[in-house]
Image 1 (cartoon, helix red, strand yellow):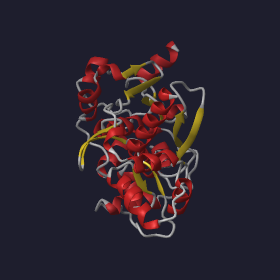
Image 2 (cartoon, one colour; image 1 turned 45 degrees about the vertical axis):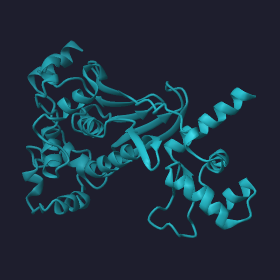
Image 3 (cartoon, rainbow, N blue to C red; image 1 turned 180 degrees about the horizontal axis):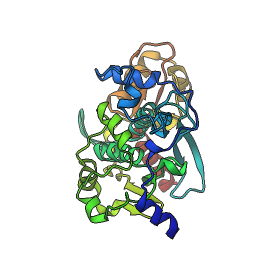
Length: 328
């Protein structure tokens, strides 16, 4: 380890200097992203973006940005507070890193649900699980600053009480923790930073860390020689009970909801025959209260339309179950 540290100080590993394991690379996806940003790529793009080694071969930066490669970003969800019970395991990649990043950001945004509380007629308090801006910065930083020379990739993990975002490699050689927390920008992968900045995915001003600190503080960072991890605790649900804010009919509907259900399934569970009565007093009331949502919101009258509980609806169902157990 001492030899590796000394060598790293003398000759810093650079993705630009590492030859790609493949030379038959294509960049159709990357060109689409540049065109969408109003910045076309000419025939000299590989040299301009530093995708070539000194010998003129495609380097590892090119490999990561190519249409096909062997790298993927990991995403996992666990049942509970530990890594014992894995319930979801996804990979985003084996294609252009920009595309993988965008898909992971979409997934994280989807998982960053909103807690809500009914405070009065047509009024709700809302709170997201995590600060959206800080979360986006953390994910992008993990991808940009990951040490791909190790062959390992970043990962995002969801637990019941937190999200953990891990990048391989500790602090960049020569940077202290104090400098890191000031927002000093010293990217591990300059070439990737250039591309992500061109596409307006990331800034080069070191504003990401201050944004994270503003939301979560220094305690959310865990440093080691081999990785850097950010741990964001999930927001607590809004605790004011919603059971007294909705009708008995809506409570009955919430009680029978399970997964995604269409109108006929819900009516059948409730034992209701009158479609109009169900729609007005059960379905519409639950939708208006934000307790259920459509699976195809863009086509409310679709024959394939189904309904599922929102975070607020799940909260209400837990309260109803808890109350029924208490009185039994």
